[in-house]
Structures are given as structure tokens and as C-alpha cells.
Image 1 (cartoon, rainbow, N blue to C red):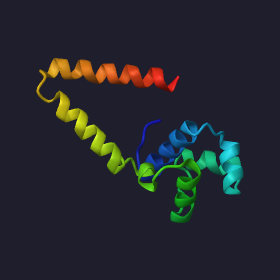
Image 2 (image 1 turned 90 degrees about the vertical axis):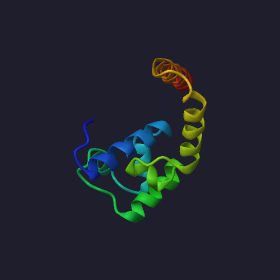
Image 3 (image 1 turned 180 degrees about the vertical axis):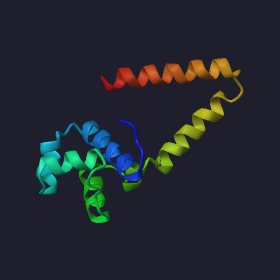
Length: 111
């Protein structure tokens, strides 16, 4: 889903977090006390959630509110920095190999 504005960025992140939590739009809507169509509209950037709803979404989806704006957590930044420190001495081609390897491992672990 291409992201053209903040509402779409937030909506896309909500959809990703909802799917990562294993919830359907209906299940998330039930927990929020809203219609599934409203969740769909939020996820497509047509109905941006207010701050209170973002906080509720974060609680339900067990993620920081910042995640909806595309920001990694401090812990994620720390991990990424540690990985970067480990591979910085490698030639760029080898660094790309490590990134591909990590991507493959993540894909397998998610399945």
C-alpha cells in the first residue's frame, strides 16, 4: 500500500501491527468498540484515529504508539546499532549478504 500522507502511514502501520497480533479487523473493532468498517477506513488512511484511540490501539496491539508513525523503539535501535557495529568492517558486498541472510531468517521465523 503506497503511503502518501501521515494518515496512510499510520493506517498501514495499524494494519501491520494488527496482522502481527493475529487479529482480524472484526476482532480489533470488537476490542475497540467500533465497527469493522471503521478499522478498515483507519487502515486505509480514510479515517485517522485520534490520540486516545492510538493509545488504545497500542495497548491492544502491544506496541508503542510511536510504531504507528514508523519509528523504531529504543530497543530496536540499540539492536540495529549492534548489528551495524558487527558488520561495518566487512566490504559492502558482504554487508549486503548479511542483510539478505537476516531477511531470510526473519521470514522463516515468521512462518
